[in-house]
Length: 402
Length: 142
Image (cartoon, rainbow over all chains, first blue to last red; front, side, top):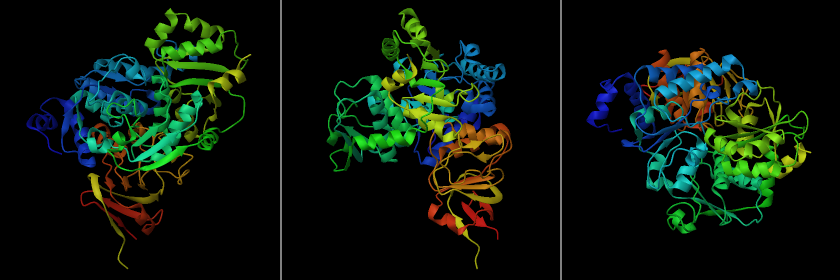
């Protein structure tokens, strides 16, 4: 990879230890993937949750912070492993919380936005069409490439912080036009899609695409940004997908031909039986859940409002907990608009600044988790400690409330 | 008979020896290896129940979460890491984990990619191998 004279100096340590460390990471990555150069980014999104980073991640982030590192572009952060405000009441151990707060402190010292969410594009990080960004969080990368028309690779932990400090990222993959061309097409001809269907469609597309960029036809024209968010998250959980062309939504893609640059590509119809197969693959049990987890990725305030509506007048059954995961910012809005009160009256809770798949569910005492999130189902089930029930919000509510 | 030598491209330099531990399926450290003992826990892995500590770990591709580098680094912090990693495709988690292992813990873990999965069968699981990432060679020692 070619480095200019400024970058060479940083690699030699002339810009301080943090930048040298960051350059070691990005140059090794750049050489590994055959990048030609480093290019500037408009924003970064990094990971700082204890469940994945562990004590080693604390060492890394503190080393960056203590050696004078500062983020040089607007930087947001994925959810923490605990509700940063109400962690005690969610049954988190002191020792566990302490390590998470060390990550929080190091992240703050680096100058990051206190915006702990995996749907940062709905809350605090707003790149525009054509901007290059360096985001971790696979679901957000799909959203950036497919909906915002920004350009991001899926940035691995460790490299995320390096890119944020340098304001640079190696040019490869989705930063190059030719890598963004669709080479497989999917067509949905089903109507009356449920919340679960959007996720299962995404999961199917992600699983079938492999490392190809897909184009997805036939989604309802009125599809919401939240529905696209969950579809993209499911796709990214099922495979390496980082972009889905959505004609009419993806900037520059109005037709199938725009997505494929006029090339003929394989086309797969998404059928009811495909979705049923995804459901049966993700569904591991018919046991009663001890936790219903909603919001992987984070629910928007609109979705919290919809949840409040369906919960109004209902009461959660004994022995079952229901957590709706969201950002601190959406939580504030829900509190001010009475949404939180309605959700709590039903016996459910909002948990903010954290998310289910990165919180210590097993340690919190849960064994069977019910969700409409394909992403949560996929991640949790791979560990084999917790059993998953995957179903639509409507059937979940009918099953767990009176 | 000539000893088996597989040729790839060194992504993280250095050399290391160890017994071969070979997965034919996409692999991840994230929720897939228990850092506290090095056991492979991923229910979808074909080497579930094996232990990566001190091994030369072969797998064709990385998969899953971008946190795999952090999980890898935690196995290093706890001293339960593989001695080297050999892949077919570039797995950035291995590269980044290895860079951080060197910078934070002073451990050198060579990473070689470009070794085709179809050739993994030429090495037996448990056979001693030497990885020289400077030359990109993976050599069976028996």
